[in-house]
Length: 72
Ligand SMILES: [Zn+2]
Image 1 (spheres, rainbow, N blue to C red):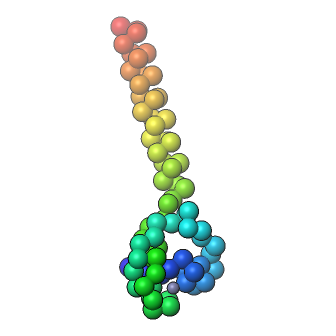
Image 2: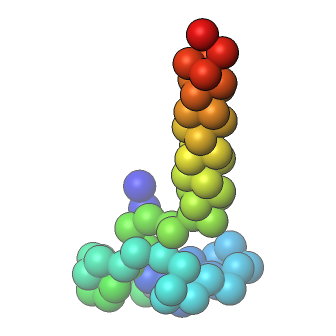
Image 3: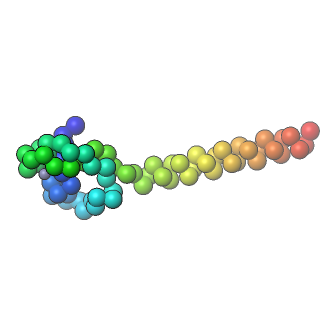
């Protein structure tokens, strides 16, 4: 994967990511050819939503089990 610093990435993709939105690691930026904090991964908001959904499913499963136990 090509490594880009936040500034180059935003310029190339016409985005406006902030430092809090990404995980940065010192690497050679392919945009400005300098060792800079480059984007390693995005702190995905979707990931948080998925975790919430997984928790909801676990809770729902727990309720179903509890109902089954109580009805016996
Ligand atoms: Zn750069």
